[in-house]
Image (tube, rainbow over all chains, first blue to last red; front, top):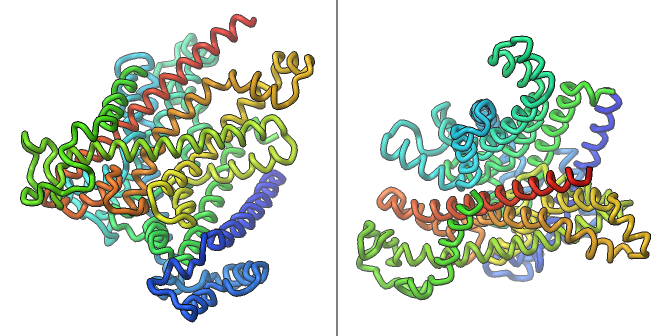
Length: 305
Length: 271
């Protein structure tokens, strides 16, 4: 177990290093000069000034070394070109909002998804199963930003029950979390249904039924325990996914998270902000995946040897 | 269920093809300015938008733009993805290790984020959105095609072909590729659905460039400003997106179920 974790940790560090290099190169891949895209009336002096501010006037190994030194040494990604603030401050404010929203959505998605999955698996092949499968397929097909707009229309503007946007209290979390949970919830439902259906066909379930275990105990004590590994793995993957996938939901609900920040930064071509936000997101996703892999290893005895 | 999807998709394709004939005005015009924000009526079944365009006409032109972007993205993802996956699965060695590691890394991130990253490099335009969505869909295609090639490569018919002197290209293109056609079909329909969803998302964020392109996601972005006074304008593009994506998902589910059935049958006959 420890050897495995150490190996995964080393892989994590390598992945982070490669990702930081890719993110560093991203700005340099922009055709033409970023300064020309940023300025409405580019003059040679202004271009030189922006290039200097982005550090683009030095050879690239020096630039990369400086980039790493700033990021690791001072946790700094440079100044945002749009707001003029240090990107670090913006990120320090936005990332807790994203993690909060992702966690809330994860809880909703897991409870609803596992529930729907078990519901369908117990009734596999019946009309209820078809209906449940249709619901999860619909959840995968509806655009979340549109669902968000509808939710605001119905629950904020017409009924006046919940706030339409922003992040001021627990009530503000409800609509974005529900909307963000649709796609992962539908995925979890599909995986749960498939896992439980598969387990229910196995011999030990037949044995349990044959010796007279109640259907309820068969499902919750025998089948679900065997199906828990794929479900836990799925939930972990979904969490990593939610961290980066909240871009649209955060935009619709004016939720001040990294997703909305990065979308705004891409629109404004704010390169330091894009780099900083990407690096934080990549680190968050990689760490979550590392934890999930460890958990998977812990839960699955066959992998421990 | 597959045929339900095909029927649903035909409606969208018909709208896209006949947008010019059935539409009330060319896409760039705003002929109903006096009736701006009019509610749905016989005259304008989906209402009139804020600048005087018939919403139903715009929706039909939107089918063209949306399907066009999705087709472009899918073409890119499936051809390039098949090429990368096939070469990785055939060649193995360092190339396989590199391709597999990069796809595994990228698969940890949602497509919308990968699309955003690609769009930081490209200028905002519908074409850029197609490229971004296509690149974002690459990892899934590469992984699946690679896995299929690895499995097929170990089978006896490939060994037989090799024994008869077939080189790696012949084995890949003539022997293995036809056996992966079903998988590639499923991947294509699946990618088409997610491409509609993701390009609409990116356009909704304002990254499709020109504001007058009637792409459905961009329409929702425009309609957001009149959301309180004319909520029906927001309804149609969203339904259109969900409708199209659901159609592709139903087709892809149906195809993969059919392929699994034939696999089972042929697998039994080998025993």
